[in-house]
Image (cartoon, rainbow, N blue to C red; front, side, top):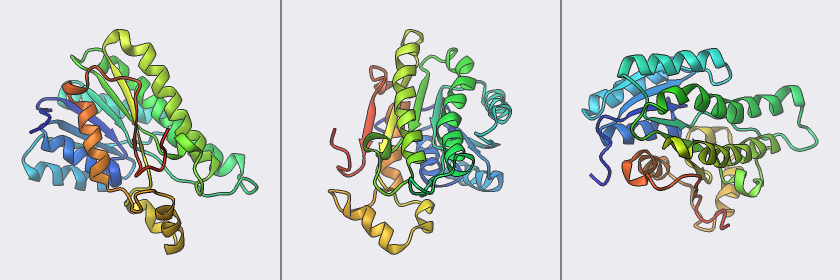
Length: 252
């Protein structure tokens, strides 16, 4: 194994499907114990059962609504009680938005996307901090987006703003938490082949591919590979990093 995560305890949000689910699987393959945290508890249980059947690290399903601080606190505590602590937090939970600038409504898509994608990420980190501070090597891994780097081109401004905010809080937390030994990094995927694309028309998917210099969609396992690196001991000297995995969609 390139990385040995045996014994590490990972709390993965949005882990019932997509990048979160594959990340949870890959972490467990390397020996980590994983909490599959998601609003859809039935899908989370299916994902946890799938991981447990593979014979690597153990998994449990935890119900989580990142839009509620009470739910976040309860899910984090349940994970720590079940496994004996938390070493790694992976913030994958998020929703898309597609409203144009002229159509955006504050009380609708704007507030919901900001609340889930940005505020949810921040407060999961906050509620997990007491456990991460006790860890030998605390890790926070935030899933941002290429849209948070370049402003996007088809996503809503709410999504681009939220993911840009994830970049900002990643850097801010990395600076403030460095003295505790906790590292904080973000991964910025381009358009990735997940269930989220089912709501796209074929024309919109092709537009996304055309905007990627490598002319293909990303695969969840390619994002999960970076998650495993940042969860590992080998990443201990990396913090405040934005890891672009987007086929050249953002070149700095």
